[in-house]
Image: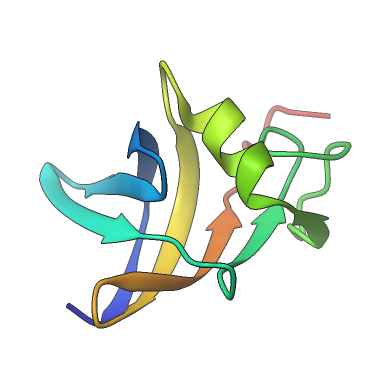
Length: 92
């Protein structure tokens, strides 16, 4: 599967395996060492509505367990090339 999915909710499933839920539809995806992760304050860093904080895959794993994170996922052949957190308007 390839394309842009989101904004939706990204949740951790297993090491390097996640699911993004967009409007009731779920899409599983993998991460790799080449996956870029950008946070807006929940995945990592301080609140940043532009989602320019560079995060690690460990940050994504830790903060998407048990609740999920609002994000958009860009995938190529089932592997995320980029995960970008969507800032909540009331954060900050």
